[in-house]
Figure (cartoon, rainbow, N blue to C red):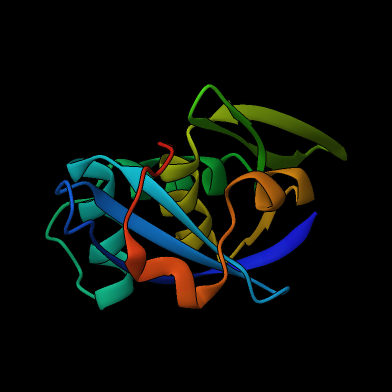
Length: 143
């Protein structure tokens, strides 16, 4: 697994898809197509905006905190048939739990919990790009 951070967000000018761009410690970037709601959930957090009521990811993080469960990390583990697969790794009562999730939802949660985002090396090999290739367009897998 390779550590990554949310580098930016935007729109694919070729087809209008909304994207989150992860930058891995290896220097590769991983563009992931995400939905409008997930884009909003991530952008609200990154902008520092405080909505008047909790959004879905805030509710999840707050609930786990009340239960004494820590969000350790988001792992983007697989790319299958153009779709990314992820899991949140949680710790509670001395045990670790893997929870299946869409990477886009997992990012919104991991960011709020200040948890690590990790990407499997095979995913980076299959879908990662050199930063210089990012603006050339093309098909981008979905979260």
